[in-house]
Image (tube, rainbow over all chains, first blue to last red; front, side):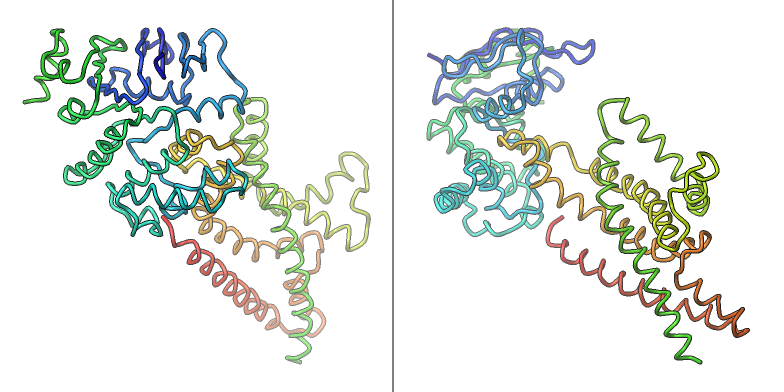
Length: 250
Length: 218
């Protein structure tokens, strides 16, 4: 059974249809990359999966349990909060909490969730995650003292600290200088090697091809093409996909 | 004479200080409350709240003092403030609290709305409750941003307390002016300026300290 099943997800903003019926599956331990031009609905899809936006129609199921059904959208704040815990999200703009150190950013949510129990274990886990991100010597720094690449790696550790079923990345390197992009991609690559279940929205085509198992090409709110990442990116079947990929190569 | 004047002005300054402190203590929380009203998603709450803020910020505080003190008697025949000094002080306090709460509420609103939506979203995807997001993430960032404008407003309040004398609330200028009639000297009135200066200097120092304390993050 797939860990994530998305069926016929639709979302409108006023009269603009941003998602026109998105369906895909994700297996546990797989990484899927979502590519496509700006405005194709990639980010909206991630935001619907994290319940930052409420889809109008369709269903989202995790491990066979239907979390979301557009016919009966959840409005209860506590239910919504628990639904969100299945997903982690790494933002394009990092969104670290400026008044907390790197380590505090990572441990804040788990400490609040545990109500103060397991404090030691949570902090140890936070340190270990930052170590995994290559930031062990930076854990007492505040976000403004870190480079963009370091901030994004803290954000990844922060998302991992809650052990989400599925970790989502929304263009994680788009706000970074080219020279800082590599260090973030390397960290995500390591996560893929450890079989972390991930959805990665990215404009880094080589990365999307090499790291992800599957790829989805979105255009105008629909999935135009999906399949094994290498195949889709090296030999796209659809003319529109070819056009998009060759446009990037120029 | 200098000592007599100084003592009298100090006594008047206590009245100033009492009005100042009570106004701050009451207007800051009330202002936060009003700011939530002015940001409400419900137009039936937001509309009236913003209307009141418009009235209060759009008219002189001195006029508001007079209306609050004399208004109930003139328009409703009610003697809500009594006829002693306590009643006049209470009326002045009510006017100051309402006036300053409205100004503070706009500062709070600006501060809260200046926090990027990404901060709320980051908290939400980490499974934090709305209350946790506000208390643990948003609040301190808001405080950092509003310290300079609040400090401005607070220093204005020190000097605005002198307006209370239009309804005969005893404060430092009242006591300074009394020497013109009683002893025919005007310098005590000018001397009150020193008290204001020292006190606002002290406040500037305190707010500078808070600003520095919050400079560890951006």
